[in-house]
Length: 186
Picture 1 (cartoon, one colour):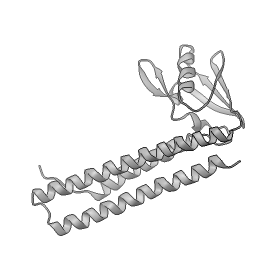
Picture 2 (picture 1 turned 90 degrees about the horizontal axis):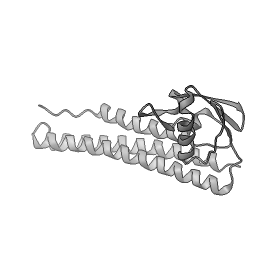
Picture 3 (picture 1 turned 120 degrees about the horizontal axis):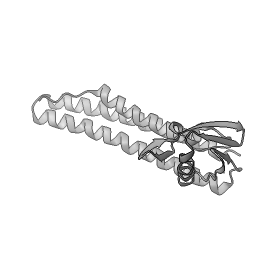
């Protein structure tokens, strides 16, 4: 089996990590209610972990309120537990199969906690990008060992991989900066 170096595949995988970070950052709340706030939450349902939007409908009836209509009456407690355990500082009120979440004003301490969570998401994204870089460099080392490419090609490809890595990490850092500014605005 011959090993093939594919820079476009590495870039695609790095972009996947970047889009995951952006998605997670989108779930962090700022001042307004948003259905995307609950998207990262997974519920233990029917013996497996499922995204909350696969067991309930999320709506925003007022600017500071979320309404979660759970489809299966037996899942209400599991959805409630998942929301409380998500570390978003939300406390749902149950009314039959509907959970209502009133979003309080963000105080300074809560804003700082949300910024820390945002930094954690960004660091996880950077780590994922570095793992992709390592995979690419491992392929190059294997190819040079198998004499599939020369040292000049290896150095050129290493530079390309590093440029792609730097660009992806820069994109994560930019998304983090935008989200941090959004959270800290009063």
